Length: 310
Image (tube, rainbow, N blue to C red; front, side):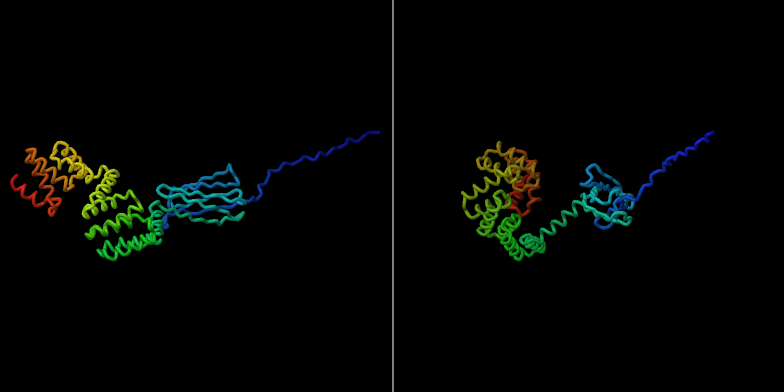
């Protein structure tokens, strides 16, 4: 018996390329602008996610401030950190629907100055600061009495507002009421015992009131805190001038004028010192400068008479 050959059909597996199925993706686009709405080119957007520690995607805006990116896993939330030269950084958490293509965001950046201005405006609307700002406007308008009332209200609302204390003490001192100035300065120093303005007012007012002990105390505190002030240097020079010690007074007066070439008291005393030393040309120059700086100063008459003979 003859056997027929068996035909074996082998089914070959056909390997087809895998087709990428639509995953949880989403497309995002947008623009980075400034506070006026103008586009910011070359801004950087760094995209990260707490749920994906190793993920980070960085894109840069084009000339129109625009950007586009693809999120492969839109099931997660992403943090968009936007930065640009000259602007404060801005962060926003974003969660978009899976499979969407119309997610458009606008990120607005502000400069440091803009943020500071907003914060200052908010601050000036608070009790105490508001009255202080109103007092400043009134002072610019020349209404000192109304400004003083506002400053008192500012201090009542916010007792620690040192600038209000300093301005009030200055107004009182300039009014010529030394007792009132002394009271305002002392209250100011309770708020800030290192206020140079209030220490100076307290020293001057106590001197005018004839309280030598208080004057010495406030002056010493002022000079300790402000050793480079020309008034402080001049006061040290006066100690030697009163002793007729021109040798030790001279370098102090020169130091005073190096700090402030137009400090009137130093100009006059240095001019007179030069006169005593025989430097007539130098004396005349400094006395003339004194008259230019303080034509109605307390030593103006003496300076004019002296210049006539030089």
